[in-house]
Image 1: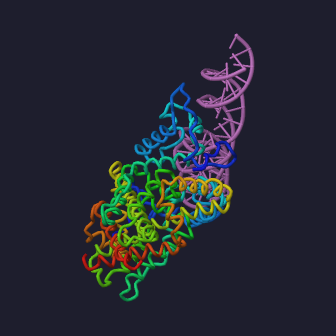
Image 2 (image 1 turned 90 degrees about the vertical axis):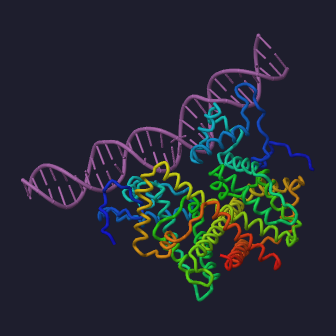
Image 3 (image 1 turned 90 degrees about the horizontal axis):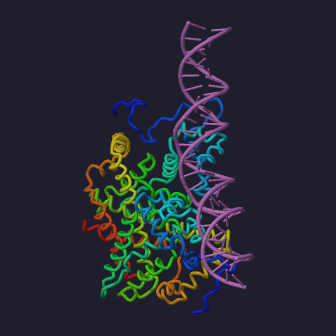
Amino acid sequence: MAARREAGEGEPTLIWERPEPPSRPAPSPLSRDRIVRAAIELADADGLEAVSLRKVAAALDAGPMRLYGYLSTKEELLDLMVDAVYGEIPPPVRAGDDWRGALRALAHGVRDAALRHEWLTDLLSGRPSLGPHALAHGEASLAALDGAPGFEHIDTIALAVGTVNVYVIGALQRQIADLRAARTTGMDERQWQHASYPYLARMLATGRYPTVARFVRDASHMDAAGTFEAGLDCVLDGIAARLPRL
Amino acid sequence: MAARREAGEGEPTLIWERPEPPSRPAPSPLSRDRIVRAAIELADADGLEAVSLRKVAAALDAGPMRLYGYLSTKEELLDLMVDAVYGEIPPPVRAGDDWRGALRALAHGVRDAALRHEWLTDLLSGRPSLGPHALAHGEASLAALDGAPGFEHIDTIALAVGTVNVYVIGALQRQIADLRAARTTGMDERQWQHASYPYLARMLATGRYPTVARFVRDASHMDAAGTFEAGLDCVLDGIAARLPRL
DNA sequence: CATCGAGCGATACAGTGTATCGACGTGATA
DNA sequence: TATCACGTCGATACACTGTATCGCTCGATG
């Protein structure tokens, strides 16, 4: 509402609202968006550790220092990457009284994004995300529960959304950690088979971990999706159980 | 049981079972333990990004390359740090039928450790922990539920422990992310006050995030411990709710 | 046409993880 | 006891990172 504050005053601004430099027409347009997209492509293909300012710049036929016209730190680039992915997540909505469906949609939206971009969870845990897409996602998440029966108080909504989000990010990290280990297996099978698996077998054979051994032997090891769903159901049941009391 | 395999054969081994080099008596004992302890001290004091092989070695009055006699990679050092912290966590036990108490103890043990070592959650999410202390902790966690009423099947035990663990790590990451932001505030207050807070206020003033704004305005913002407990209760209720059906 | 100004990116620097290898001190052997 | 061989330590080096500095060049303007 108030007039936009002039850029360039001493006050530091966050990357989200700092204006882009005017796109110089000459060599190649280059925009914050193109930079972020290039970085995301790099991270998707070769992992987060492959995202260096030099490589991103090279992917855009530019020198490394060129990027510093659009961002002032690598961390800002990572923040922008996260926010861009938040932009990909369809905002959860609620149909009728189905708050469970809304929370499920929220969980699956984040899960799908995290599986598309395996580096996402690594960045999500670093620092709270406050970009416009992240805020929009948060807004949609809270709004999806607003007015549902039992969710009259904002505290109830926040607890539900917060707990689901926390479960989702934890579960995704665990799954992606396993997935990375398995991929290392796939690409370098000898290494896993010869090092990790026999190692675990030897550890279990010591008899010091009988319950773990029983788990490895007897448990019906669900696939990742099933485990995720089972835990999510747990959390949703927990929310439902606490609803009347809150 | 079987004879220990000879070291030095081609098969790669994990850090956990590779023997230490015999401690040369002359210049300074130096052991894997001392290295890990030095690294943990460094990480506790100055954050994980301050842990470089050079600095760890310097803290032990040694050259950087000396460490490579005890570890073959920095990642191994990080793995050892994580396992050392697992060793600090008191193994959860169950008193009588109180499975909730056992899971609570599990959650609080991990939480206390993660608050003592803020870098822990950053490492936990990277790759599954299979060190001896981590395995012992997992064993104790599963065993603490073994035989409790309703937990006859190992799948039930695994679901409960897994869900609680996943919640705990997610919640801790969120809390520590906020804590880091707050600490940045404390040490560099102008930066936060001048950049982040007015930024958020401006974003909310746009009216595009009404529910988020309502949350910021109206919610009874619990402290970190209360939020953790509330979410944990949610998860425990969820486990309880699903118990009969499993 | 001449001048100015801005942005690009070559160069540089401090720091990282790690490979290589020469020198040194120690233990075993003749 | 004298010599040799071996094994370990750490100086040096390399490729790479994020980022500061600053001269050059090129476009727009008077």
